[in-house]
Length: 147
Image (cartoon, rainbow, N blue to C red; front, side, top):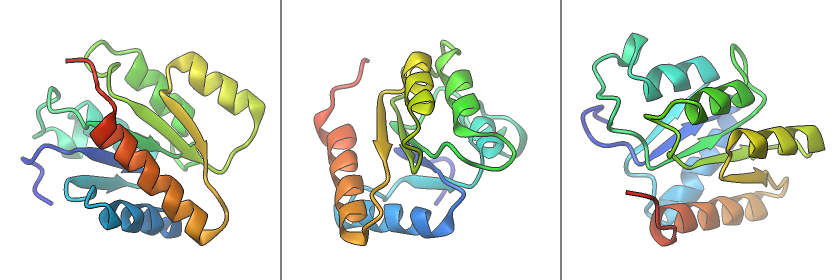
């Protein structure tokens, strides 16, 4: 995908199997045309804030949504969420935490930091595909973001 095209979905997921399933589910609903997949929190912040390998990006061209895993190498999703939601340039980007963690402290902290949704990844293949499809449809087509 060309980086000068507006990114609609930023997927931040270190597990390649989960990333492939997520992309597959979004493709089934024709929602993955403008998707960028990154494998850790540091890459995600560099992308969102147009720095490092992504310094050619325009920071104002924010993704429409971010699907964010919590448990990742280099920098976890909670730190990514905190930085995105604490910056006035990026705080309105919907961040959907898509994780395997059912731990209440994680859920509480994510909502405290401004997560727009917290979804536990279903273990069963069909349920996982359905959950991601529904998420994509809601956040990309039904939800009305602030202008």
